[in-house]
Image 1 (spheres, rainbow, N blue to C red):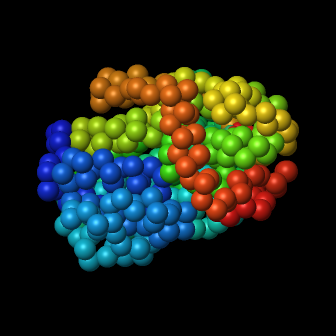
Image 2 (image 1 turned 90 degrees about the vertical axis):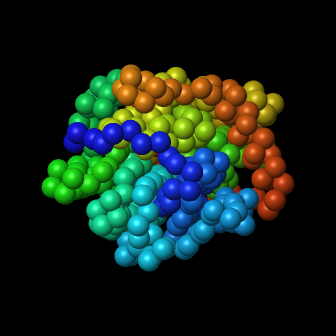
Amino acid sequence: MSGAPPRPLASGERVLVCGAAGFVGSHLCERLLQRGCEVLAVDNLISGDLQNLASMLDAPRFRFLRYDVCSPPPREAEGVSRIFNLACPASPAHYQRIPVQTVLASTLGVWQLLELARRSGARLLQASTSEVYGDALEHPQQESHWGHVNPVGPRACYDEGKRCAEAMLVAYAQQYGTDVCIARLFNTYGPRLRPGDGRVVSNFIVQALQGEPITLYGDGLQTRSFCYVDDTVRGLCALMESGWPGPVNLGNPSECHMVELAARVQALIGSASPLVLRPLPPDDPRRRRPDIRLARQRLGWWPEVGLDDGLALTVSYFRARLALPPEAPVTMSPGLGTAEGGAC
Ligand code: UDP
């Protein structure tokens, strides 16, 4: 894929955000409104929450439509000039309960959006994932790594769905000259993660705030690299504006063991919650850290928020949110790779 000339987001430009009521999508909508764009926000609310958009619903340049990306796009979406696609459940505990909807969002849904982009001459940004690397064979992970993914495992609906999405974008660019770009997001965290989301940052914070045991899967020595959502959103906009197709890693290269994450959360909250060991879910990647040299070179992007600062902001959010009726965190059931209890 060769790419298009850079094109900054212009004031008044019509932008479609799919998965807008989700955690990352809602932050992106906020930023696009600040940039003066007209935002058409769509979501089927399968894992998104309209509450995430509450502060925007009355904004003059903002419109929300309940829409599933697997269906033909609403007529209001025709003629948009940019499409950000973040429509897909992203928490393993959640997407493993709805694997069919998950794989369809990244295949049938992406196909619908590619056709829209082709008709409208829009640039389509696909939110892909570090999961395309699977249990990676190289460390840190560079964009050139082809990945090590189990195509029939419990994570396949998400990992392989996103890999197929990438392949479809490349095919449309090659065959039709569609303007596309691919961002591979590494673990993102921050305000608006749902208390019952099931991902590690929300689980640990909610458990520590509620004085519940902190559920550490496996030996806790597996690593992830956590990127604060504001940094991620800045990276998505930079890629959209660049004209460059990627794929590009967007993540924070500072790597952390899960046992260390638990300790940091406990220290921030002043929590005495004990750690409780649970079996490691199947196919849980052992180590994950992005190589972000390409993002630095091509986008002039790198993360600015350190883990302790980002966690402190996230803890404040959950403190306020948990003053509302609590939603129990979702945890993985041993060995099955499915969620037990809790609302998703
Ligand atoms: N994890 C954990 N306790 C939890 C939830 C997750 O120890 O309550 C671990 C999980 O096994 C994985 C890491 O934290 O090694 C990140 O999990 P998450 O579901 O947030 O995202 P992933 O990167 O696996 O998609």
